[in-house]
Amino acid sequence: MTHRPFHDQRLFTPKEDMKLEHLLSQKGADIVDRWSNLILETYPHDAQRFLKKQKDPFANPVGTTLKKEIQKLYGLLLGEIDPQKLTPILDGIVRIRAVQDFNPSQAVLFVFLLKKVVREELEKEIQDHRLADELQRFESKLDEVALLAFDIYVKCKEKLYEIRAMEAKNQVSRLLKRAGLICEAPTWSSGPKENTNTESNS
Image (cartoon, rainbow, N blue to C red; front, side):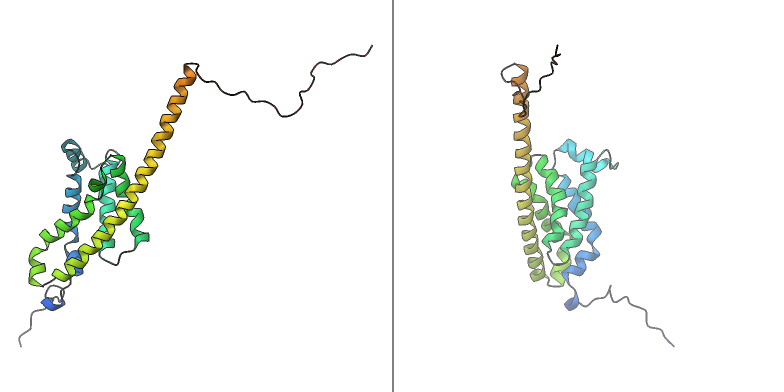
């Protein structure tokens, strides 16, 4: 009696049944790793080297946060777009880039870098399984995410401008006080002044 070899159906999925989402899930670790590296390469050369090599989360909070949030973001991108879930993750990434003075296009570039990674990592599979339409839908989803990231960037920059303006105002105020050009306004009591002198009746 001959035994047919066991085949894992997940490894022998017919071409017509293969979905882009399956491929994105199967190769997720490689895609996220390369995506993270491309994002770090948007930083200056010296910063890249530090962010990639320093593994201590306390010494390298930026690199640690970026990698953690990118992994979360990728997981959410495999399903339907949910702005409520995406916003806090995007905020964690965009806020870092806003503080570091990336311009708007540079700040949201990390979303579009995923398009490059997916096309290159899954090029053969996309052709073999005729997944061009699914790829286009996935990339349209990334465009929506980029717009959401841009809105977050604008809000972050507005908040930073407010903070910097307040800091500048306080600094000027301190300098003027130090130069004696302005002084604190006296505080006046609204109640009647009490007479502290006691008179003795003779």
